[in-house]
Length: 318
Image (cartoon, rainbow, N blue to C red):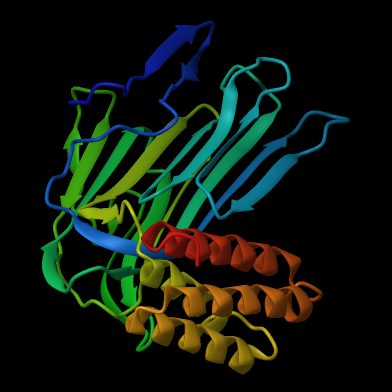
């Protein structure tokens, strides 16, 4: 199995069973992909779920769930052996999961790991793009499953979708490499028509589950999409519009009207008026959204400030 620089793993054997130490860099490094479709990310949701169970008398099962607007990684460590039993990473355009139920621990029952990513975006330009989806499985990877889908949000139409459950169920064309730790790989290249102005949702999801004495890891990444490096004020404004339109908040119409006025001011070149509209938006968010959804209000306020800063960068201090 070929790996790029920065990606490595180590397997250590000892005792009557195998202790798996599987190390990854904080962000998996995969083959570079040129000519990416540039996208404006409107919202990103990352989550991980981990759990272990034990037969040991007097011990409790362990579980933990995390969610964030930023990429996250989490792991559970065996309380006695000090090795990773469950690990999940939810990153931008990538997910991975790892589990190990150590065979020489007679009380260990199982370990589970789940990683999930949802990214809402709009393309900067309309184009037909051949995306590349890379999937990797290692060791007893067939105790895993997951899916990758791309949908157009307003219509709810799924443009394409792939899934697997074990080695033989689903539509992922796994290729086995029995010379390298029973690993498997798959590459998918869906041709995708992406239209500027439309909103898309990309979902990546994977899981693994271990029972003694197996260990497994799977990883998925989508290539061919890249964040816009320097979002324009209009691109940042789109993120606010998405938050208002696709959040269950009261008085959304008044917030929408302010954002429409800000967009019109930007299109006229009146950046000072646009900045004033965004400031008014922040005030309404503080009074109308914060009392019922503080987290959403904080996200809106942060993005509003990004819009104002971008407007300042284009025309002094509006």
